[in-house]
Length: 92
Image 1 (cartoon, rainbow, N blue to C red):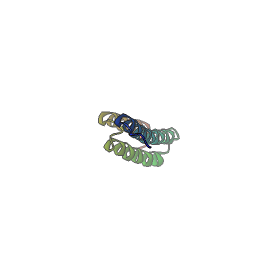
Image 2: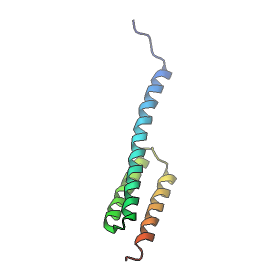
Image 3: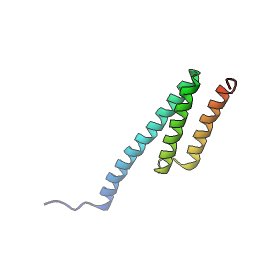
Image 4: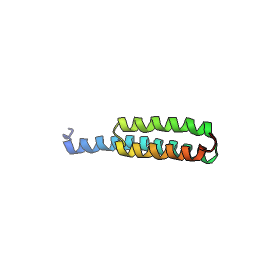
């Protein structure tokens, strides 16, 4: 005969699933940041612009899912755009 589960046990299972899902999304964002920074350090303007656009999209997606907070996403996007502008300003 099966015992009834408590709501706390179910809540724990749900929160663990959400935590792993959020962790995967954050990890993906970190990966895109790293790829963008590598492209900037390689002085590849076209690749860096593509990576920046992709990174911006992923950060906005994470924001809409509630994984990252609004100001954190804005700060990250701003810093990455600034890095791009400073690095490739002389090239333009």
